[in-house]
Length: 318
Ligand SMILES: [Zn+2]
Image (cartoon, rainbow, N blue to C red):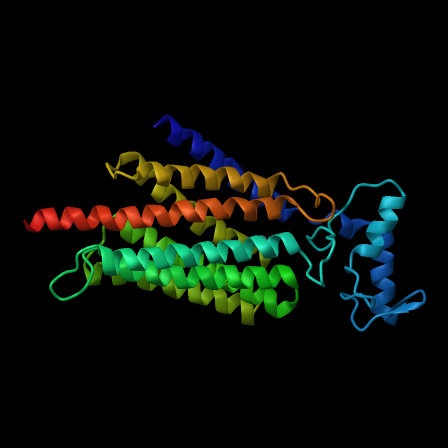
């Protein structure tokens, strides 16, 4: 249980620090130079000789934060965040190329994991007389795979170009995935097998998650509220998996441990945020990098689980 206590501490401190980080505004926003320029732009549509279609977009294809950052660099100041974002160097107009590539890689990882799971449960493991899988959670993992691939797709689109619609699609997809993973965690950890009990778990959570997504998209896009909702849903499911990994005799419980502890440590990257190295790799991009091997291990656990449950059920019948 030592490993467990350690990861709890890591996870809780990660959670608290990230909440604090979210509540603090970006330093660049308080730069008097920047405030004056944005003010001028909003009043006249122009800053000195340059005019803009919209004060959030630049006219020359450069990142909106580019000019302020160049000025700061000349003055020997450190990079600053504007509207919660670091200034990045673009590649073919892509705002955060490294995060885009890593989101794409994770999408590929999810797809590979899902296909190998599909082949395992449908073609390699024995089926019930009614041609259904012995594994009781097959359908849930299929839904999880689809929501997950959807979320990583919109993550890469959002990091390519941050505009209102891409941001909403990215956030909504991530919330849907997080909410469904919570339902799945409860059902798997407590081995909820009857249809009625599953509905009792899923219905209130689905209603809550749907309401939350609709609220953000059509009423108010409240970052602070959303962060609280996401952290709460995330903490509960991580705790469920961690506690289960500590008490179960599951043969692949070590994989659960690695994902829980690894995910907690990766969370530290979101706290110890640093500006993009060479304009490309910031803490968030590194976090994206950690999700790739963790996704691989996660699907490997899911496949092991299906084999484990199938052989346990067959042994019971014999
Ligand atoms: Zn991201």
